[in-house]
Image (cartoon, rainbow over all chains, first blue to last red; front, side, top):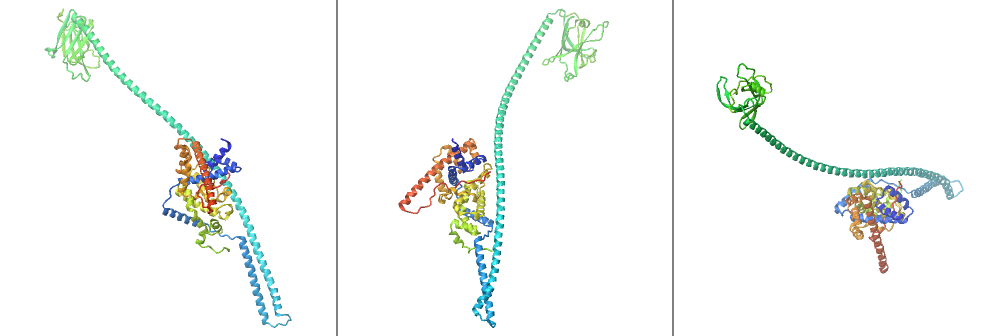
Length: 402
Length: 234
């Protein structure tokens, strides 16, 4: 694009007022010396006006249009200033003409009056009446006209003075107008600068909004990613819990198998042991009388004691405040010592209502020949039984399975 | 003391040409000015409304415009150009300025009626402001056929729907600069098409006149009407 083509574009856009202040300033400078651009502006304005009219709102109802015209006409008529103008030249001429006419009439009137008065008085002079009248008229009307002329000159001078004064005021008003124009131009310039600044700020805001939107997009993507990760974590945690449950099951099964293996070994030891006492335990009512068997004890002399108790009441042990304790004593009074604690029972099989206690201290087992069970408070190291004996087994007899 | 001639009756005033009415108005005859108002109010309002696309704003603008013209009457020199052409040029410029002000964005010229430069003023009959909307639509539709798609879309949005260039750029997902360039290209093409058409009509008209010796009729074509509006230097 050549330099002038750019000005032609500016000319076209100037007709629409679509130039920035800088472009307008630049175009004005160019336009002053370019008649072609001036023509383009004029033609573009003409085409634009036609296009605006073509795209303008459709014609309204004639009544509405007439009402609008009537309203606007009344408003304009109300605001029109009353202009009283007297073209100076015309007024001056009429004033002069009126002054001359007045002077003439005044002179004629005065002359006529004097003539009439003289006609009535005796005339001793030799002059003709006509000549006398003319002379008198001239002598009287001359000063009057002179006076009127002087008066009119004064009026003219006054009017000229007024004209000069008005010219002075006009000049002052023009200066004020120029100053106002300059001030208006400055204000417009500032306004244009503010508008430019505002436009820049609007662009910056738009840019910032774009950045904000981009950041929001990134954030939403990150949130989606986090949600996805969280779902994966939840899934893994669920799998982990499942594995842990299965591990726990396997561990429990393994422990049970170990216990069964251990129990099997013990059973094998007991079944294969020599000098084995298998004693049915009986209940004792506190008066030396026994009742039906409630347990069974396997005593391998000087080695181990396994005590199973059945159907022990759970009323006191359910809340954990009491436990069943096994004690060992010697029925021989010579060797009587305080009963030795052998341990507490644990619920071996709830379905069978079976309790068990195992003791493997050979030294203690050598000293005792009787085992009995009492109900003791839990959590306290008892050195002697405090409850009444519930079950009792005696091993003082020779082994019934030698 | 006034030295005015005997006032003319309203009927006599209505028969006077614009320039005589201007002379009467400049001598304080308000009725003469109101005859001018009645004569041109409708066209001035229609042009202002077409540019601004707001009836209330256009009405206010047209009222202000007539008052400003009246205030300039004392300085009106009929030798400078036809009153009607000057009036429409002033109306268009003020309407464009008002549109810019309403958009609060672009530069506006703040021209005064008596500051218009009539150096390029042409015949009053060529003034497009005197066209009816139907005639203007017919002319513009013919010109639009010569525009490519982008130019046509922007020109229609700007002139017919009253959108600003920013709004057009946003709607078209394009830059402000591109939208302005399409508007320029479109207007430029329309100017050339309508200018060529005007010249052809003028030649045709001249031919008819030679053949028939008939008096030249008032044409309704678009041609350069207005001159450069000299804005105040900022």
